[in-house]
Amino acid sequence: MAERLLIADDDEFVRSITQEVLEQTGYTVEIAGDGLDAWGKLDGDPSRFDLMLLDKKMPRLDGIALLKRLKSDGRFKELPVIMLTGDTRQQDIVEGLAEGAYYYLTKPSTEEVLKRVIKNALAEFGQKRELRSLAGYQNNSLRILRRAEFCFQSLQEAKALALWLANASLDPERTVSGYSELLINAVEHGNLGITYAEKGRLLSEERWADEVESRLKIPRYSNRIVKVTLEKTASACTVTIADQGDGFDWWNYINFNPERAFDLHGRGIAMSRAMSFDSLEYLGNGNTVVTTVLTDAGN
Image 1 (tube, rainbow, N blue to C red):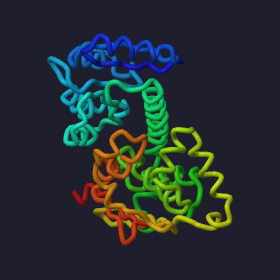
Image 2 (spheres, rainbow, N blue to C red; image 1 turned 90 degrees about the vertical axis):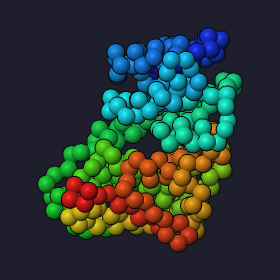
Image 3 (cartoon, rainbow, N blue to C red; image 1 turned 180 degrees about the vertical axis):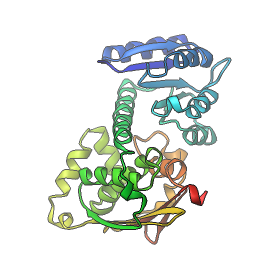
């Protein structure tokens, strides 16, 4: 079944052109002329759409106001929202990303960029939905767990461990995406040395996963592991993730950076810090990160 997209834009020309491009790509597309019209379509059938393209400036209810309404409503937690804007002011971009926008597209965007961003968003949110659907099946033993240690190497192991850590935190729906992001970063950017620029290029060429698997077989990287330690008290769950890479300039990534707003990646750490954990701290050169989730007793 084709994914169903909603375009909310008061510019009829932009709406029609974008709709035509996306329908030719194979998506089912509906349109809304302003924020209130879009909210009516969403509120009336919350599970109807797989992704939303949202213009920032619209009459009656603008894009940021609608984005805030969506992200404060649990029914739309899994809906990826791509903001459309002709305004590239840094403070506006940061505001939208902080409110939960997946991506910013400037108007007009090329067909290639538009289709690539939508494809990536649908794939990423699909994976997160799968992780969250599997999270939460903890047994009672996780409630009395106090310490655990792990070592892993691959993306598949990272995803499996993210589920386990999320369940052990006793707050799986909130934390699973954050754990997944940090564990995958430890493999790709840490142990395998894939740079930020390289990942952007690999994503655009749809070769990222293949490159990760290829590097895992290279002797220089094949023996590297990621070490993970979980420690729990009555009030908090602390997870330490340490890779064997050279580290990175982590201070550039813990907050939303408007300079990366139009890149295909680069927001995961800031999103994890803001939404998945009560604290997230990198140590030293950046190859160790410590996260904390407070339990009910610690709040």
